[in-house]
Length: 331
Image 1 (cartoon, helix red, strand yellow):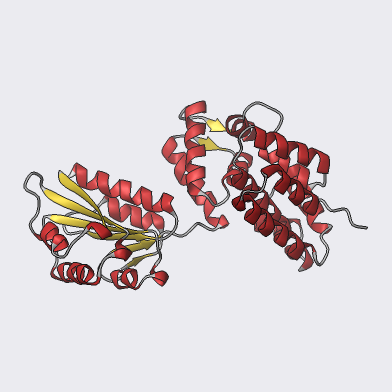
Image 2 (cartoon, rainbow, N blue to C red):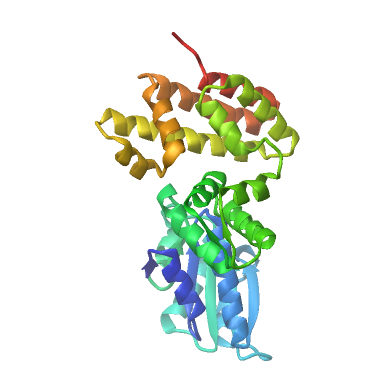
């Protein structure tokens, strides 16, 4: 049975009991890791022994024995099989047969970093298991994740702080979770945090941060943007994270331009991009200056920067080229 929402899968796992068949797959390791942690905690609380195996470690007969014989020293066994897509043909047939008969005194959690569309084994597990696929969230999902994680950490953020945190994390849930934990440890549980509190904690008290870098690029301040890039890299900011943040900011400009070209006004741009107040004004000002070929040209510049960073070209040189492309001053 396919589970559509992460919250639904998490609730199911946290209430799972004997005989449960759970499966989590897909490329987003934060979501799958969280489901794994919840499942282990749930069955450990019930006195189950936790047995973990990579699919390649299992021989013919192992799955049937572990799921039917139970545990000698515990109330049951949770069998966790990682990389389940790599099970051999006979071992997979054995797994399906055991699940078809039903299991008692045991439960199973099947994990894979692949998605069903890339694995016939995973597709066949969608029926016998409670199956959730972990894809990278859409930008529109991030506010829900921010609400969930901040609630768990016992903090709250005002609207501008949420926007900055979303910009900082992009669509990376692991980065978002780490940032929320850091904010909670610094400010303390029960605190409401504003934008200044987010910037201070995530980027330190200095006058250079990733937000200033993005603003300098989008407002065409080339010299300041180059200085920010150099100082951020010198401070140890991850180049790919910096690139992802800048790309996220640029995508909002392109989205705003499309909305405006279709006759949309301030309210439409704000609803489509999440920008508010002065940030909305800056975004619309930049979007209003885009020319017909800018989106394609800048997209190529980002793709080139990503490739060059991953191929080992000097980080600052890559960002210098990108800043020049984003702040081109053609007549």
